[in-house]
Length: 321
Image 1 (cartoon, rainbow, N blue to C red):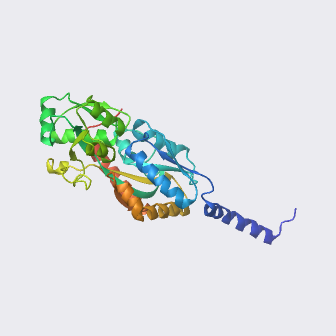
Image 2: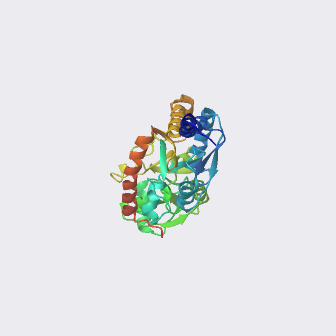
Image 3: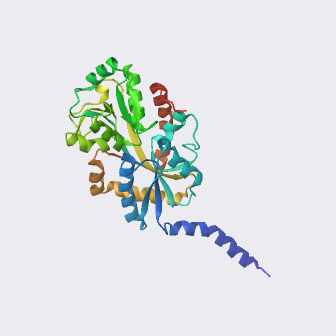
């Protein structure tokens, strides 16, 4: 078969533009958004808000798929090791991505090399909470209780969860001890508090806020450096423990080598949603804080937070073998 130079040139040109054309037609089918935590958890709630906003702007459904377990490692490993970089499997990332490597000692992913950051979307404080009828009225009272009874039980969302590390850091900062009762997520923390099977917990504000407002839980403090706008009368832990600051984050990411045009389009769609007043009102009503940093800033943030995560794990003394 005779192939002329002109045909060779045409074939070469076609091989160059084919990937670009594929990216231009993206998305041509539904997108999966992997959430490494259980339904009803704070990451899951925000991921569903984001999936709806992205789907309406991208013209394809964005379907949340929960893959919980091992403090988020199961979902993280799935995206890092099994998801192709085609834009059809994305990750709803949280701070567990950078905390888990020093916490577990070994994980099956690199938090920097194995993911493509898209948008650092939201932040969230945790709440020091007890049951509404608890005799513990404030943080000083909680510290006094823990010094008197180091077997006082507290609930977390599982080993390595934000609720676990926050309490571990609190105990290290106050020189106290407590008995850790791990559950599968923040919804189970508040259920244990309401049932009285644990004395205190530090779930994320988003999950605790409705029960605080309903008078079923008492908020003693928030764990961020400043007070939360949704609970202006509740002090920050830093007002009792100077310098204390534990603040969770959530964002959109993909597997490594996600094509730049897809990254730009995803970030643009989410930034457009974040700029929408109706979306902002809906998201922030339950305690979420808008961050809205793009891919480059998100990548820099991950590197900084990996260092911070090592410090938190070291100071807290938390370790999972």
